[in-house]
Amino acid sequence: MKSLPLAHPLLPLNTFSPKLHNRINPNNKPFTFRVFSSSSSSTSEPVRHEYKAGAFDELFLNVFRTKMVEEVGWDSDKPGYEGLIEVANRLVMKNKTNSDTKEAAVRILRSLFPPLLLDLYKLLVSPLAQGRVAAVMVARVTALTCQWLMGRCNVNSVDLGDGSSCNSGVFVEKCKYLEESKCVGICINTCKLPTQTFFKDYMGVPLLMEPNFSDYSCQFKFGVHPPLAEDDAILKEPCLKICPNATRRRELAINSDQCPKAS
Image 1 (tube, rainbow, N blue to C red):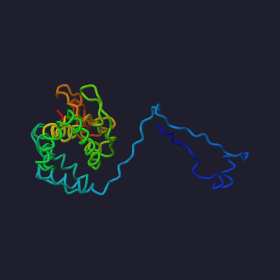
Image 2: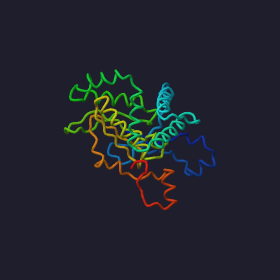
Image 3: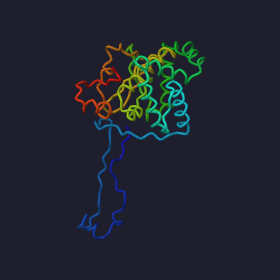
Image 4: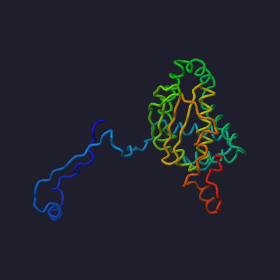
C-alpha cells in the first residue's frame, strides 16, 4: 500500500503574527517536521468518503420511487430520498405480514426490468462458468448503479461455497437506506430478503446480504447461498438504538429487543 502523509504544514510560519510566532518558536530556530505514513498493518478504521451524486441518480431515484408508489398506492408529499423512505415505511405498514411485504418488494424489483431481459439472463448467462460470470456481472452493475440508494460501495472478493474466491462481492461502506429508515425490519423485509429472492429466482444468481447494524455497512455476496431463515442470525437482530419504535417501546417498558417489523 502506498504511504500517505498524515501530517504536513499548511501555511508558512511567517504568515502568523510576530507575537504568535515568538510564542511558538521563542528561539527562532528552523522548524522540522516528522511525517508519519499509514501502512497495511494499521489497525485504524478505513477512511469513509461521502458519495457524490451522479448525473443519473435523480432519474434512478424517481423511477424506483414511482414503482414503489404503484405498489403501495400512496405517495409522500416530501421530495427526494426523504419521501422515498416514507413510502418504504408505508409499504411495511400496509401489508399484514412480513411475507406480504417481501413479496411486494420482489414485485417492485421485477418491475424495474423488462421481463425478457431477466429470462434471457437466467437462461443464457447464469449457467456460464458455474455461475461465476453472472455473479461478477451483477456485482459490477450493482456497484455502478445503486450508490444513489445505498451510498458509496465497491466490488470486492468473497469466499464461495466451494472454498474458492471470486470478485463477486459488493461492500457498502455505510448504507444510506438503513441509516435513513432507522429500522431493522425495513432493511430485512424491503431490502435484504426480497433482494436475495429476486436475484436467485429471477436472475439465477444466489445472493447473501449481510447488513451490519452497528456501523450500517453491508456486504453483498453474489454466488453465495443464504442460510435458512432459522439459521440466519441477522433476522434475530434487535431494534436500532435510533429506531423511533424502539424508543417508544422503551418508554412503555416493553421487554422485547427484537424489531417488531422483523419478526
